[in-house]
Length: 477
Image (cartoon, helix red, strand yellow):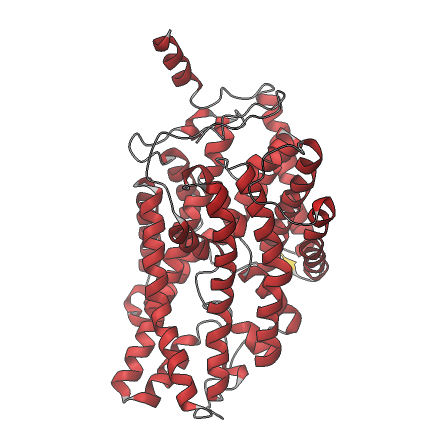
């Protein structure tokens, strides 16, 4: 892959191609994107509880149209035009400069604190449903730490191992839901009036919409590995569209199947799929089959949590790498494994940060997640428009239709949904302040961090790999 040129005032090493290594093709990229965004049906139960079957499924159907597809089109254009290390960070930096590029990376990495620490905890939560022994004392924390270490090692072993493992995990965790979908039409109304334990969920229709947004966000995470994808100009647009369809189907189809069986909508809450699967198993067999279905759903939950953490380590670790290559972080973050070309220092440092957050009892702060992600997404839509203006001749193998008007209108519905989440977040209380105030405090931290960086290193750090490049040039001379 040839190196793309940047305007002279913003030269970047972040889009230079790495040494030849195994590249991702369409389906491994779709699988990795699936786990960066979704991880399967788990986590969507409260949507049906709060909105009911009809409105809940409608939300799950409309949200990707208004929220995900515009993002997929934007990523398709920018990834095909600028298949850069660091993805969305590199787009924003190229369009608007170092400051806004830094803010884009800051928003994503801070948001990861609220996201990444929970996945090992979810893994342990599902594990203790099978073996309660792991929930005693600090055993759960140690298992969570093991998940972090194993995912870090898999990522250091190479991007293709992560993507292929994501593909297999997708098939395995989807299998029990496929069985549910196949059985449901044969047992219509069989579970009507089923009395489950009372649900403790208090999620309403508005909360359901926010959970929908949360479950459909993260598409741009796949862009950070663009230089490690085979023919990214062609692969990314196709992968994004396919992934949107796959994620929407994994959310909607299992709920539609359960609707046929007559299970009350208020039976759903986070983690209830295991009990509902046991009921479905009981319809086709005895207690042994019911237990087998339940165990399969619990194992699927463990694979979902593991797969999400594993894929997101791959995505987030490319941000410090790209920033180091641009001199915005110390060059040590740009060190890569000699064989797999994995940014091992960035992986180890980020994994250590997430590991320190284990056991703190994080809950999914959906409002903060959506706010931070929405702000970074807004910067990406702005970058799309700015690059259309600044670089009209930039080769764009995939282009959002409709010219400049189409590019502007593409970001309207996601930004409106972001505004809705901000208004809703004002009523949430976090650490004694509103969710909006807490989110703005985190966003302001990026401005402070950049000011500190500018004071310590006004001209930035030496770009990662610069010394090696100089050595190569001397050898060539």
